[in-house]
Image (cartoon, rainbow, N blue to C red):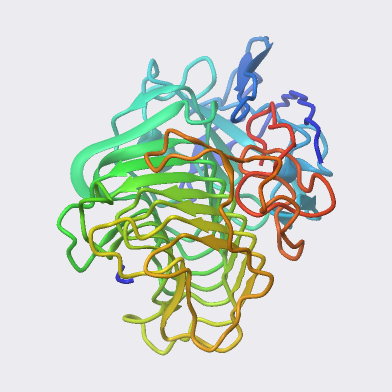
Length: 465
């Protein structure tokens, strides 16, 4: 890492028996489990209500090694559209467009709770205690449901799913499961292996350089997490980030709907351009619907082997060095960051540090001629709003975004006022069909710019993607 439409969704809970699952090494790790009683709590975003739906019933006996049980499926979310009850659409599910065109596969489920025991079978009635044990035990086509609570763990998840059967680690409440790694090391959650894995809805913090570090091969999705207060001390050459896709040979990983802030210390006092909010350093992938603020370096940073990346509908503000940087350099070499699509982003009030050297949006290092900058609101950044290499932004807005309540310290309300110049000022190509709180887009004649769509209703289910 270096410089560098309104409406709500219905919820349907279904549970069916499942076959056994297999561990990382391919050995059988659990028998097929019956359906245990389940409680699902769902939370909306800003202004959203919380609801709890319970379905009860004893789980049947499992085979040797565990009984598991199959997850209740929340139908109606973008990743389940078109699926039969009790199944998850894992193939061809487009997180941004909400189109599910793939094969629906049964999902094996396990549970983790602070009251659990890793000697248990991981069923709803007998959950495991640690996320790490779950990561060491599950295999493809699995959902790990993590119940609310505080988990003092530094997680390394090396298991991988497949295109037909992803692995998903899911906080049962949005930000209800807190992962805090209190050991000084690289990452609070290190995602390795061959990918096809999701980390959804966790709060992540700790005495580390990186909050969620994706070093997997491909197709990892980091969705709806709250990553914050990552110290990344020292500003050494390794840098740091809230969320980092760090495998230069990897591809097609998404960072969607996260809130990332306070990485590297106080951005008004600390000078370091190596520590960032969101850092993406490989081929393709989507960075969408995120809030990134109060990070000492850049809010969103492309570097190393980043190419053909889509960056849409993010809100980036009050970062120390700059807002968003597009470029390549350092290892592995030979990469020009090109054919990137940067659209519908709010980039506001960045460069608040003691030595702001970045811009609102800057191209830096090795870049190609075909990056596109469309319908972004870029305003009040230091030393200037844009610094592009021979390109002209298209339909750019240079006005105050008019948030409901702007504050640099993160205590504000970063939704848009009805009179905001960002309302109906976006474009539709590659734009998400929902916003950071699961509310549907667009409302009105066009997409709004930024992570929030003004005038919609936040989703009242979880997960909503």
